[in-house]
Length: 184
Image (cartoon, rainbow, N blue to C red):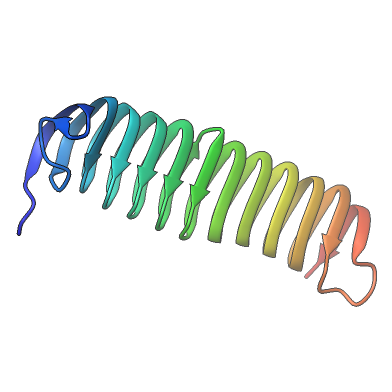
């Protein structure tokens, strides 16, 4: 069964929308309460935006959920991407299950795999950091780059930690250092 592609989708709430959930949108999707589509390319505006596949473009909403890869700008109160993210993710709560490439800006930022770029927020978490974390609490299992915050935590560091408390658990000695920790 092939899914159809439409230039515009209007939705009050699913299933009260102009297309079915397995349709893709290339253009504009407007969701009054919430809408569901397969893939979206273009602009997506609504209260609750759900994309079951890939998203490319600008997504603005209270809660944005993309179950595939995301490329572009995602802006809202809570953002969630189940695969890889490329671009800018900005909200109070950001979560990416795959790899992240770009800028993640929010109160709580989570990248469950590798983060290439910048995480800026109150609490930042990533499995592997290749870039910069700026926040009150920064956590990375592996950190290659810079962690700048009140508390910085990593198992393995290849870079610099600047903060009141800097923790590197893989060290044999001096696992906790104040102000500055450097390891290459």
